[in-house]
Length: 128
Image 1 (cartoon, one colour):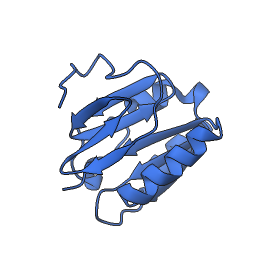
Image 2 (image 1 turned 135 degrees about the vertical axis):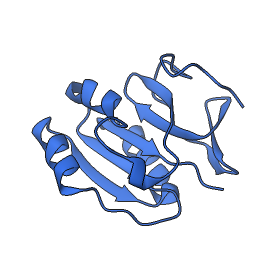
Image 3 (image 1 turned 45 degrees about the horizontal axis):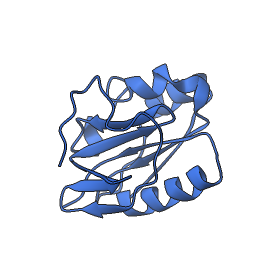
């Protein structure tokens, strides 16, 4: 599994997620152990292991790239999590809708939306 520095994307373009589990993901001939941030400008390592750690700081790249994103899907691992109202409001202020679901459904939804060429991003917590 790769370990790109946090300022360097694993892949400098969006990519569908091909597999997940065992604490990581596979996409575009690559693999990564840990959580991922899938954005229009690339696939990034994301240092979040629990949904309770998701805040504006954890989503800084999403806010920075908000001009290219309409929808943010958050894969919350194996536990249900609701976006705190202040974070939802901050995303709404930059015109990003947000939806949370377990990581598996988030990946499936992300892949479909990406295939439809929608302006989608995904923050995906790795699952065991």
